[in-house]
Length: 310
Ligand code: NAP
Image (tube, rainbow, N blue to C red; front, top):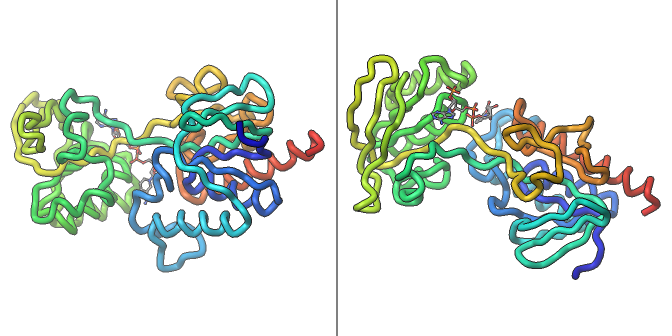
């Protein structure tokens, strides 16, 4: 068993790293558990144009890496791996990190949210073989190829625009004809000559598991009922995210979708456990709001420890 920690932060995205900057600067020697997607959503995005302080924008991976370095400069420790089990029934809290148990007086959950999948039988089998949830990671492989993006939100628009750098064409498939995407992001995609829209359309199947390669899809128009097949090489799913709270289920209050229910500020229903970022936020989900919540969670952890005499 490792020494008792003051603060353990679960997650190394914008929220977790910002909480680390603040708690490290308060001399609490935080430990950050990097999680199964180190750097979080920012590490999978391209240019972030709306994080204050960067008039020319900053690349997501650079932004999160900068915050990590800043946290390390103040003495934050980082640990690879994910939380496999948690016992929050009494203090100190106990966490199983890839088989090693750690004890901590306070916990900041900043484990974010992971990509949502369509749930088609062939989808999981073809991940890494043409099916992807990360254009930044995998777009490069589809130079001159036919690309399809699923979704009608900002992520889908961002991915579609980005993927036109590589693909010969990018088809955006959306199940409705109204878009959740912001006007500016939608307009950018609509004015991009390489992007074509298929609205009121759903994907019924992805081919070809036999070849272990995406070769095409079967599509269906939900209004006319028309069904057709279309050749595709790269299939990018951009339909939102699922909060990473599975290991805390039954111990922390969440809503029906698993997002942590806030008890004001950064508090959860368990004293000493705080939340930050997308794991609780289903409304704003921005890098700047995640950073702000990371700061709030850190300050609350600090006050909690002080009140307990640590
Ligand atoms: P989102 O806004 O929740 O949009 C998800 C999209 O996927 C919706 O169009 C939804 O369709 C569709 N969808 C969900 N489940 C589906 C299913 N099973 N089958 C087919 N389609 C499905 O998610 P997001 O685009 O990832 O954006 C999340 C947040 O991040 C938003 O607040 C967004 O503004 C922000 N964001 C910002 C930027 C930026 O500013 N650079 C970039 C990316 C994301 P319906 O509309 O029919 O529900």
